[in-house]
Image 1 (spheres, rainbow, N blue to C red):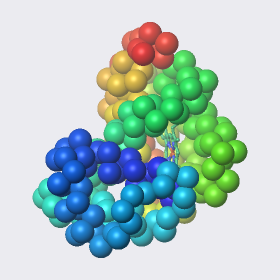
Image 2 (image 1 turned 90 degrees about the vertical axis):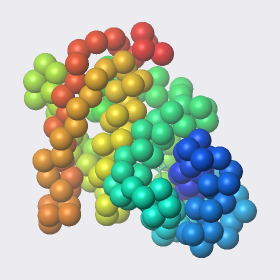
Image 3 (image 1 turned 45 degrees about the vertical axis):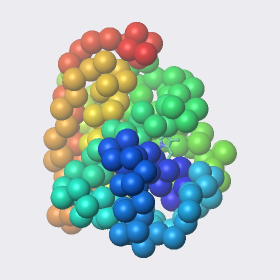
Length: 190
Ligand code: HEM
């Protein structure tokens, strides 16, 4: 994955416990890079080892780490200059989630080695969505739940996510039902 992802993990860790904690996590993960370059591609295994090291060091599950990271990713990419990408992708949560593939496709223009996930979003009620998540990577569904937590904050909505299908159980994709409280639109929430 692009170094930007590992930088996002680093940013979360530093926020939680400073540079000292980050140094400890890196050591535990056996990561020898001094810094990550955002636009360089690193093996997925590096990210996996970082997540595991955070989990072991903080005594929380890898799924909890991924959820926290997903939420942090929304804030982090916003801060790193990707906010404009967000703003063109939808004024409401349903519209935004319907545009996730278009968003990653647009990012692929500047990140040609991107191997993005794919999403299918369907509105099933006034405040309810169904989201299918496809990836060749395994185990990242909790990150999606965290991304939805973060998007809830951006849109000023209370979002509740329930996973109804899991690749852990042999399904070919992960699937979520998302309940959200009607509220402010994107522009108002920022
Ligand atoms: C402007 C904001 C965003 C940027 C810059 C971005 C960029 C990226 C990058 C660089 C990766 C790593 C993949 C690779 O390097 O091959 C990634 C993965 C991923 N992205 Fe995004 N993304 C953004 C927003 C989102 C949002 C809003 C969602 C979903 C709600 C999302 C879902 C994911 C997931 C689940 C992965 C994990 C990889 C996988 O599932 O295979 N991203 N994204």
